[in-house]
Image (cartoon, rainbow, N blue to C red):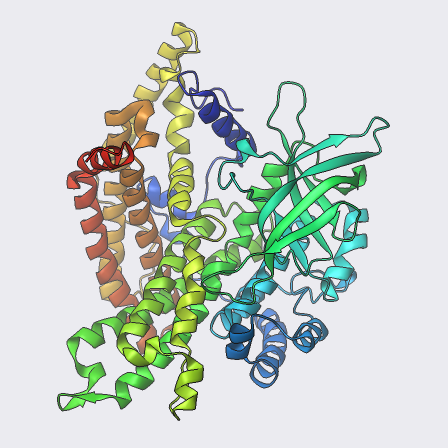
Length: 603
């Protein structure tokens, strides 16, 4: 691991193992990009103006596919029946395969459509507003299943063998989670041992919640491959489902996503050819984390589509339903929800389209923060939006689409959308884990400069030298975070948005100072202040959403987009101030003491 960054000497063995494994698998590049500049207190607006616009040629390619996908979804799929029966019909699998929906980003040389990340995100938006089960099927297959890891890390032989089958409709899956292992891979028990002749690995273990596992012809399996000095080293393997020793133990059932082909998969002495290692031995967690960087974009993209669907349902009802002499949409309590739905849809789409454009511009672009913040902000917005739509529709929101249809009313599937959307703040990194992941990345520049000064494993002379260098750096860095500077905004920017982005610059400086103050106050124990870190991360997420919404509205130039962006900025400014106030005054210590009392069973 990067010994110079974090002192693990005072941690328990379990904490140390988990942290060292995570650190060894991090992207070690120094952070770059707009999101990083927000946390550093100097938002570089030139990097987001103008908002990236999809090229005409790329958009036409995407439009051609999306038109076919829309027609197929409308004519050949029944999301309510899929939800009711818990199964996706065979003909739907076949139809999606014929469209190329299983190989959207797979290059044409391997039988795929070869579409861009932006077009893939557009497809996820379309699916997200239509059927959560189909969204999960296609996204788990392409974002974290076989295609994405092989596109990034695979050998040419692996690509030639597996990608054509994936593109043709062969479903793939990803197997990481275990019964006692969620976000702590250091506790993984599934293990792969190299055979005596070195030709293959012997895989044993059991994986939980393997999405698509029941339908997959092959999957990416994460397993421990202990090597000298690295007992928790993890590797990624391509495992075919029909190999001897691969067993589906049971199918898992959930509150939503009733047709999710998710289950427990057991591996008993499975022989995995050595050439089926992805990347290299010991690089498994890096494969998983890198894959998730791009894979996480699918969730906020789907939430953008969900929010658009919810807004359509809520607006239609708010115009039709009359209470106390006027349409309910004209009552302030409902109007506020409608405004938030529209704003959240626009902001979520802005986050997704911007980050997708970064990927399209450079496949190796560092999108760690942008993708994680889009996932965090977009999935929380999606859940709020589904909940608000149910509140607006009242009893008709709580009633199933089938029941509404039986009574002769419009069968808006609000309760299905609500159930299906709840998992999004948990899938591929829960909100709590995303807070910690983003905080770790945001703190990285500071840790690189000064953490060695607190590392008791270092010689005193080295610690003092590090402290001196850090002191000199912050002597110049800190005063600049008080100077009201703002540059890089286009001269033609809407005056109200210009004022709002000046506020973003001010709030960004405040965020950088708060991070610095928190480090000075808590030192090496800052990682324990999870609620504080979560609030500071949420400030950064709001600032990113505000800026990208303003940039996109400026580029689009229409009155509705500009009005949406103005509201997003006003609301975001208010939220940030509330978050800063909570960071300073929330009763976190009292709440922690109460929780410990409850945990200890004291009455």
